[in-house]
Structure formats: structure tokens, C-alpha cells
Image (cartoon, rainbow, N blue to C red; front, top):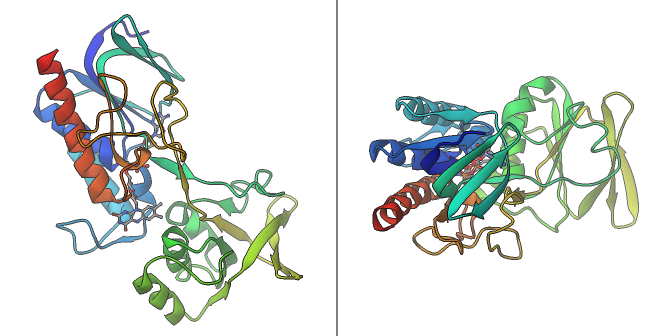
Length: 303
Ligand SMILES: Cc1cc2nc3c(=O)[nH]c(=O)nc-3n(C[C@H](O)[C@H](O)[C@H](O)COP(=O)(O)OP(=O)(O)OC[C@H]3O[C@@H](n4cnc5c(N)ncnc54)[C@H](O)[C@@H]3O)c2cc1C
């Protein structure tokens, strides 16, 4: 256990946590960043065209820029470390991780979101053996193969647009009557010659012994078997807030914050996708990360 009492601990190294760290470093705060990775979901995105200052940048390129920026400052980054619980005891905040325990006066939770799972037969058994959740990270493994993308919103469209350039054929399985997401992305997808869209369709089963060999989908009263080597699950995201049992959340498990990023617990702030802010975007998460640090700084000055 680290007995030192930090001024601030930041949890999460996505756009919100990295920006919070840059602001904390520039305020010369005594702080650490605890994170499973640097970049967060920003690194999963294919093409980013809405982060001001970059007319076009890929997700991995932007994540690398974030990493270069945050590593410029001399403060401890506890990387590949996962927070398992947070507690408030004797007037201080305790952060327990899979490797140790840290104490702080203030805390910023910027732990973002993770992929929702399908919870169907074959998914768990074939995870990382053809079942994937990130087209940017795992797409290149499916070069020249046939794949399925499950979902119909922006994440699914983004994944499908990346995969049409890599795979021979992409089956897009969407359980609503028509695709959601941005019209621009839908148009791009329609222009790609190698996508088959199945609306009103549900994946029932992922098939395969050692590796994925196909999927079974149901559409009204028919069941269809589609041979594929990869299945990309893109059906939305859920907040990484399970470790924050002491914090008030909404029905979707998002942390409730006010417009200063304060939570219901004094000294604990939250920023980015893990919160109930209405829109989930890189620039919004980054802006809220900055705001959270400035709020924590003010809190320390007052207390
Ligand atoms: C496929 C895809 C494409 C997208 N495209 C765009 C786009 O073009 N433009 C745009 O603006 N937005 C886009 N987004 C949304 C954008 O990526 C998110 O809004 C943004 O990354 C949220 O930032 P965040 O820092 O709040 O959370 P995240 O990016 O989710 O980062 C959370 C961080 O917390 C860490 N973490 C989680 N749990 C723990 C724990 N228990 N302990 C320690 N660390 C933990 C994670 O490892 C990660 O580093 C896209 C998202 C996806 C999935």
C-alpha cells in the first residue's frame, strides 16, 4: 500500500482522464493517473473528423498524440492497473486496485465505457477466436475473410466501414427496421460493394469449434446460417462504474454530475462517457476532463 496522501487521483486514461492529467500537471498538483490503457475508446475509432484542429485523424493517431502530450509531464502513471473499488474513510479517499491501494484528498473518475456483450451461445467460448469488439484493433486479422458486424448504430457503421476495406464480405446484422447512426456513414456504406445489410434480424448463435465458423440469425420466421470467420459485436456501450459503489448513478449506471463535474460525494468528481452528460464525444469528454481538474483544484484551495 502507498501510504502517501495525494492531492488528486485520476482514474482512466481516455480523452477525459488524459486532459484532466494535463491540467493537473500544469497546475503542479501532486497526483497520479491510474488506468488500464492510454487512449481509451478514442483509440478504437476509425476516422475522426470532428475533433477541432484535426480535419482528419485516425483513432490510433489521436490516441498517440494524447499519449505524447501526457507523457511530457513528470508525474506517475500507473498503467495496466485496474481500479476495483473506491471508499471514503476518515476524511480521505481510498482507491483499491488489482495491484495496491492509494490515498487521496480528491478523485476524478474518468473510466469511460466498455462494449456491451450479446450474451448468446458461442460468444464467450469464441471470444478472441473470431469474436471481437474493436474493428480498429482486430480488423486487420480478418484480411481476405468474411465477417459479420452486429449492430446498427454509429459504432457498428464505423466498424463496418473499416472492415469493408479489409474483408472480402461484411454481413451487417441490425435488429431494428432500418439503420441508425449518421447519414454520412450510411451513404458511405451503401457505396461499398461488399456489404449485405440484414434489418429486423437477430443473431441467435455464434458457431465454431476452435474458431468462429458462422452465425445463425433469425428474421421474422426464418433462420439463416451465414458462414463467417469473424463476428464484430457493436451493440453499444456500458459505463465502467461498477467500482464506484458509493457514487449516485442513473438507471443506465452513469455517474450523476452537476455542471462542475461534482458527484454526490464531496471531493469526488467525474468526467466523460462514464457520466450522465448527454453526448458522448471525444471533445466533450476532453472538455469535461479539464473542468473536473479545475473543480478539484478549487475544492483543494477551499478545504
Ligand atoms: C468505434 C467508436 C468510434 C468513435 N468515433 C468517434 C468520433 O469519430 N468522434 C468522437 O468525438 N467520438 C467518437 N467516439 C466516442 C469517443 O471515443 C468517446 O466519447 C470518448 O473516448 C470518451 O472518453 P472518456 O475518456 O470519457 O472514456 P474512454 O475513452 O472510454 O476511456 C476510459 C479510460 O478508462 C480506463 N478504465 C476503465 N475502467 C477502469 C478501471 N476500473 N480502472 C482503471 N482504468 C479504467 C480505460 O482503460 C480507458 O483508458 C467513438 C467511440 C467508438 C467506440
